[in-house]
Each structure stands twice: as C-alpha cells, then as structure tokens.
Length: 153
Image (cartoon, rainbow, N blue to C red; front, side, top):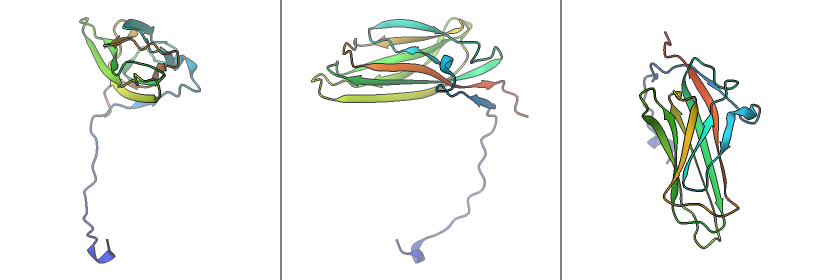
C-alpha cells in the first residue's frame, strides 16, 4: 500500500467500565499458586485454594490450565475446571485437547479464565470423554490472579 492510499481516521478513546481491580500472581515466584496436575484418567480431582495465594475477600479468580500430550493418546478429551457456587452449582471453563492416536506427535493447549471464588474453598477439575494414558502427558492448573471486590469508584 502506498502512502497516498492510507486513510487515518480519528477513533475516540475507548474505556472498559466496571472492571474490578485485580492482583497478578506469578506461579514461578509463588509455587503455592500451582494447584496441581491435571488428571489424565476420567473423573474429578479437587485442589484447595491456598489462603497464602488467594485472600478471603477475593471476588474472582484468574485460573490457567495447560496440557501437553506426547505419545499415543485418544483423538479427543477435555477437562472442566470448576468453581462451586454457594447454591451448589458450578461455573467452569473447558480445556480441549486433540491427542495423536499414532503416537508420533506432541499436542498442546492452554486456557485462562476468570471464575468466581469457590464456596467449597477448592477448584474441581474433571477429565471427560477419554483417558489419556501416555506417560509423556503433563498439565497443570494454576492461579494467575485474583480480583478484590467490585467497587471501582
């Protein structure tokens, strides 16, 4: 594109309103922020939320989950990472992976998502659809931040 064809348009400043302040957590310097390993067999595991990482007054959690599959694995599986609400229901996000049944490849995926604090004091992680049997598989759930309240005035 030549300079005479460039058109510059003024765009008004955009603001995101009503976003609560949040505190970043770095798992490499706060090891307790690494909640644990993703389960590689179908079923659920629970990870307590460490009070040394998430204060009692937190209003939201920034959770991160990552997975790396190496070796022979089924073609599809997914995890739900869930926070339990006071009424017993759950808010969750999913992490999907597509394995390599031939065992010749390595596949990776990750997801970060804000969830409300868990009424149970723990995060529940469930693997669905298929077990992931290769010993080369790995993955974790980590806390990458938390929000403090909703009043930003």
